[in-house]
Amino acid sequence: MTAELFNQMAQSIIDGERDKAVHLAKESLEKKVDPLESITAGYLPGVNSVGSAFACGDAFLPELVMAGEAMKAAMAVLEPVMKANDSQLDIAGKIVIGTVEGDIHEIGKSLVGTMLMSSGFEVYDLGVNVPVAKFITKAEETGASLVGVSALLTTTMAKQKDLIDEVRRKNLPIKIMVGGAPVTREWVDRIGADGYAEDAFGAVEVAKELMEKIK
Ligand code: HCB
Image (cartoon, rainbow, N blue to C red; front, side, top):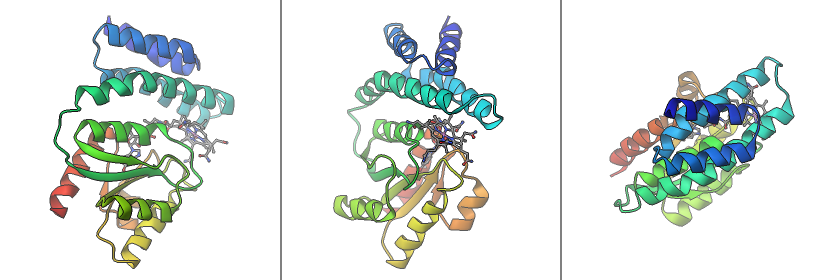
């Protein structure tokens, strides 16, 4: 039953059917399906499928755009429920998040933000296309000791290094966690990031570990 719903969710993303994706998200909430499971087991396989098709030339930019819009619309239905479910938690720490300059991919970054929020973090989401200086200013302004930086393009990953270099150069007490589809362990070691996570679950764990080191 749920498996069928998840299949339909994935298909709605593959077909770029925004309304269908939203309808299924609402249906899942009525059926009391865990919203995070709907995202990870339902919609994400669809997003990954479109991404793979795009990579090998079987899908084109319009399909990518439509899949992204459908995913965003479904998340807009599910995220408020995820946030509300865990609103009673103590603050685990403050974190600034965003996607680097030149990069407008926002779905993964937002999912990480929602998961962190649901786990008790106070999250300052700067959105996409965020310059290095803005991450630093926001962390200083809010007193956040953690910054989570996403990059989805091999051409924009270098901005993660720029941020780390700037934080080190200014000797700021800020830890940097990086992520995004092209980010590998080798890249993380090369740029000297404090933490790395492959997905939103991992991001929460890494953020908690880094907070322990800061305390
Ligand atoms: Co985009 N795109 N795209 N895209 N896109 C990718 C990323 C490719 C890999 C597709 C491919 O070729 N296979 C590719 C990048 C290739 C590369 O550089 N290696 C690509 C390309 C090339 C492009 C354009 C250049 C296409 C063009 O214009 N010719 C263009 C770039 C625009 C720009 O940014 N300047 C572009 C545009 C788009 C949109 C706008 C159509 C759309 C984004 C819509 C939106 O976000 N509002 C889009 C989409 C949807 C994708 C794919 C299909 C999905 C990305 C996504 O949302 N994944 C993606 C292919 C793919 O990744 N499978 C494709 C789902 C999320 C949940 O995963 O990896 O973002 P995630 O996040 C995870 C994880 O990485 C981790 O946790 C998250 C949650 O589990 N994580 C963190 C992320 N950030 C973290 C931070 C932390 O601190 C810790 C963990």
